Amino acid sequence: MKRWIAFWNILRKDMRTYYLKPPNVSWGIIFPLAWTGMFFIKSGSGLGSIPTLLPGVVAVSILFGTTSMLAVTVTFEKKNRSFERLLLAPIPLELLMLAKTAGAILFGVANAFVPVAMAAGLADLSTVAWTAFVPAVVLISVASTFLGLFIAVAVSEVFEAQTFSNFFRFPMIFLCGLFFPVAKLPVFLQPLSYVLPLTYGADALHGAVHGGNAMPILNDLAILALFCLLLFSVSLRHIQRRWIL
Amino acid sequence: MNEAIRVDNLAKRFAAVEAVAGISFTVRRGELFGFLGPNGAGKTTTINMLIGLARPDAGTIRIGGIDCGANPRAAQHLIGVVPDDSNLYPELTGFENLCFCAALHGLDKRERQSRAKELLHYFGLAEAGGRKFGGYSKGMKRKLTIAAGIIHQPEILFLDEPTTGIDVASARHLRQLIASLNRAGTTIFLTTHYIEEAERLCHRIAFIVAGRIVRTDAVADLLQPLQGRHRVQIACGAAPEPLRQELPAAFPELEFAFPEPGLIRVAAAGPVRVGPLVRFLEDHGAEVAEARRLQPSLEDVFVQVTGIETDQMRREKERKGGAP
Ligand SMILES: Nc1ncnc2c1ncn2[C@@H]1O[C@H](COP(=O)(O)OP(=O)(O)O)[C@@H](O)[C@H]1O
Ligand SMILES: [Mg+2]
Image (tube, rainbow over the protein chains, first blue to last red):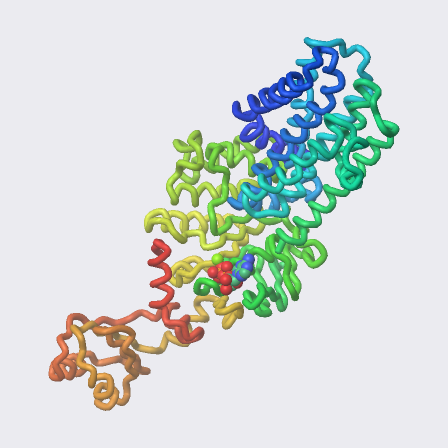
């Protein structure tokens, strides 16, 4: 019970001081809007192309909404030493890091539904398999958040966290089958796609929205879950090894 | 269980620096224990190992009877920590900061708020409680950081240089607060590089120099060997250099020290007769401004035991902008 008081208050403080600030909220809305608009104009194929664009826009929104937050909630607090306060709280490190990442996960899920809401006004989404779509969104959000965590704990400056996350994020837009299938990538790049978690998330989203998945959705989700576990445990080990000097 | 903290052969090295070189000590329950040493002696490194923010290379730590060997964070429910840096959240108010720290220790909402109000009042911050921590003065920040360290009423409190970098009046107030916390039953482990602070506050003191404890004792016992000695300090305008040799020759029963230009310290086993000394000095061209008896102080013990001139520590203190 006491642990959950700590968990909830860490989460609530991050939400209040970082996530629910006007710049963040507006970024969460403008960013997906811009991506949707860009691809919509570029493809020039009218409203009919929305279902094929939606998975990519959802994935990009989650990816950018989550990863950038960890640079602040973790790297920045480590740098100004307030993170030491959290490490002194009598709760397990796992729970502490879940509290520090839960805000980003929720923020990512919320970001995902901005383009969905916009698309719902323009196209018919009645054929979307929500029972696959929602778990995929949640898992992409968790995996991207933990990827952000993985980067945030490995660096000591906020700008480094941002630079490194861009190093991962921008290639992922093109390598993970967000807007065109992995199969259309040059053959030598394809192995790279399959070591990136977003590839599986995007595949599941394509499957859920318009049935265009390359492998069974359950496999996608299972692999994504494995990535989550891996990234989280590696990040935790890093904290234990490097932060508790 | 009478031991709050027990440390055996604790060691920690950072690359080439042996920050803590095998120290052992115990802190009794209810005690106010001081770690006194110059900057870089290894005080913060020791605290960090005790509170679970650093991993020892060797040695054992028991906090409240709990062995912290397997898990450095195992005893964190027993302790409160006031770090050397006021690391609360600048964007939260004083009140919010305290409530947040209380929540980290699992206090429920009603308890958090009443404790926070009580402490803001106790530390004279009631007015400032609604303002953001980022806008506080150094002294206020220090006070709130201490309040945050005790909001969950820990059995054992760690204070890392609590009065460094704040003004004299705030420092005095803080020392009173620390003493009263201890009287109310909290075991306190305090580090400082102010000798006077350690002498006034602590029951027992460990002198730490270059990662080693050179002496641990009760303040009264540390001062004991000096109780029989008589000491006089003479201030005079720039004493001529040859006096350094002539004085000991003329007064063989006295010991002389020249800590800085214009100061002469005299020590002896019996009472020091000032008259002949002053006459001798004036005859030799030194103008005596003042001669006074010195009370035995921890400073003398510290110099004697560690070989570190206290002027050196004082200079560091001034550079850091602090005052005792
Ligand atoms: N993280 C670190 N990396 C390298 N050296 C360190 C680190 N922390 C402390 N040291 C070194 O260890 C020694 C003891 O430092 P510290 O414990 O901070 O001393 P104190 O608190 O007594 O001033 C110093 O020489 C310091 O430079
Ligand atoms: Mg220190």
